[in-house]
Image (cartoon, rainbow, N blue to C red; front, top):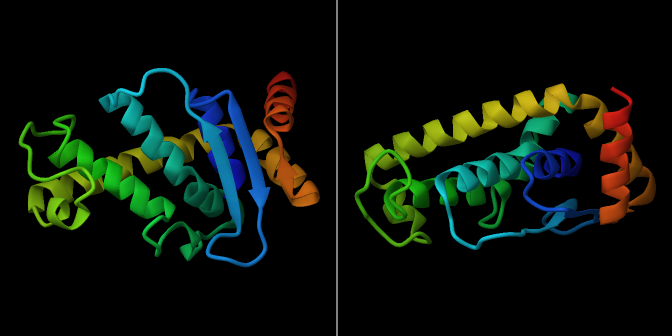
Length: 173
């Protein structure tokens, strides 16, 4: 799961600083930390890359474990909730989706999703991002596996560890 996030963050150029940590107990079993760089302004393409990155953990589970777990969803701070919220804000708040109509504040997910056109557009945006990141992870399977194995062995990967693994597998292609 976390290796998928790391590979997507690197591929989508979201951050030069990517670290991973496995946890025991608690609501999540791992965390991927990235420091975003550049402009704080939300753009349609940047938001779509971020949505794909957030969905990368679930996609990695499906591709490499054969079946996704509920770990990507459920809680209000889950990957699925975050991706859905960003997609809904694109469609019904930011004017960066298929409509320019402002419907609600970006953090008002229930109101945004209560509009059928927004809910349909959000589902389409999530499906497109999931397909994109799934194709990316399948194409970079060696990198995902290398990061996952190192994280499983060490429990934590620093930004320099992640960069080294990405560069090593890139050179091995």
